Image (cartoon, rainbow, N blue to C red; front, side, top):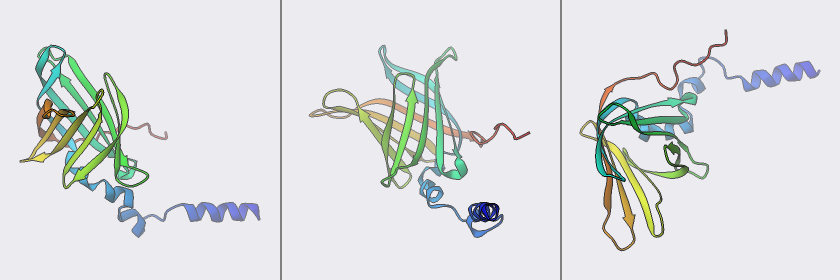
Length: 184
């Protein structure tokens, strides 16, 4: 009897191949549609505020889905004039438990989980940057380019731009889904 129950339970939990469930996006997959414009490999110019003032880098981004479209993975790298990596960031965007979206990100200096707001194809997020200050990023597809701008916002002062990048899509990618370890 236990064996029959275990087989019935396994059958109930295994999705049927070719079923409507396989072709229809899950609510999580459909929820990430506002981020689909990020797919692919991107390259362009970025201007960052550093300890030495504003510096210009060659910025690259790559983005793709994982877990059947339930999460989006994004990696950004900024290269200085010598070709050395001057900036590196990695983020995972996913639906948040209470609704909306969140991004868990890591850079060379910090890590955190931040709410992500969506307005059409523009996404934004922010994090604390000292007493009475935040840094707010906005990214979107503008005239076919990935345009992202970061501002430092301090109470009682006008926004101050600390980062701007404009990237051109240079191709598709199979990252991060490709290259996994196979069963045999």
